Amino acid sequence: MAASLTDLDLLATFVEIYRGGSLTAAATRRGLTQPAVSGQLAKLEKELGEQLFIRGSRGVTATLRADELARRVGPHLDHLRTALDPAPAFEGTVRIGGAAEFLTVRGLPALTPLVQRGIRFEVTLGLANDLLNALKAGQLDVVLSSVRPGSGHTATPLTDEEFLLVGPPLLASTVDRELLAADPARALEHLPLVAYSPELPIIRRYWRSEFGKRPKNITAVVVPDLRAVLAAVVAGAGVSALPRYLAEPALTAGSVELLHQPEIPPLNTLYLVTRGTPTAAAQVVVEHLKERDWGAL
Image 1 (tube, rainbow, N blue to C red):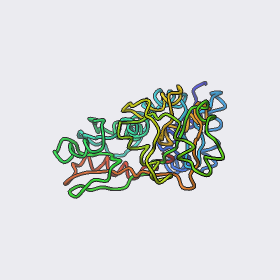
Image 2: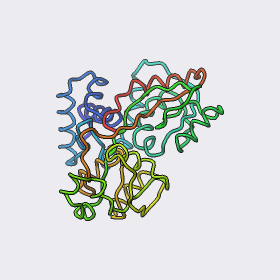
Image 3: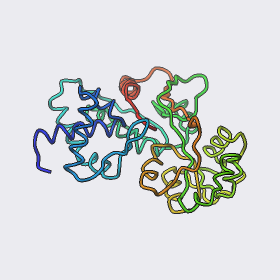
Image 4: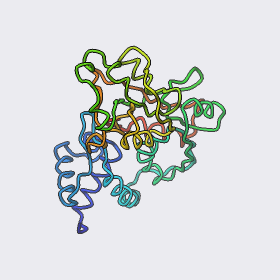
């Protein structure tokens, strides 16, 4: 693709879609209409000859090509904005914690503009309760938590994760569709599970929410990373409940299939948590994350 001012405009729109997870958010940040953003994205995809985003009911999900392009062009565009934008620079280090999957796929890309304006980050990946304890002990400044914290913390609902029950096509083909409609838990109980931990926290929540009971399925694989859970499911090891932002690309590619379609998708709220009075840099991060349109999760 030959370099031009038009190309830079298309790439700037692409980066906003990638970081915001929706065309609406990109339109707002770019000062354009949503049809204009859609048109720019279509033009860029045509020039590249590849799809960059998978459109969903609650936003868009980046493809692998989009991940690669964002890594290549995002920092350069941020440097250009820094040179031209009179917005104030910041300073300070913010110690932020969150789940590895969310921070890797959505959180850190959303924080990149603040890096370009001078804020430094020390990132801790881990489980919600461990991170909240570290926040309480003064070891972290901000936590993105899937668990609602107790008293003593300031917690703001940030966004909702939507969970999907998915499995590889071969296992999906073994499900009795008539029984699934009548008694879904029984129709699915022969399928092995791929779980995040031995306690099956996400899967048990899905079963309780949708079927009103605990799963009777055997657990075939336990791996403490949802990206690895998805990889095991795609490989055929079993089925699992996963956030839409992780599962949707595999669904679109046909690597996995939706095993159950609830009337109201199970949701889990992600909280933005601080304790005491945040530092100036941490407060900038908090406000930046609260203003972000997170799109489909």
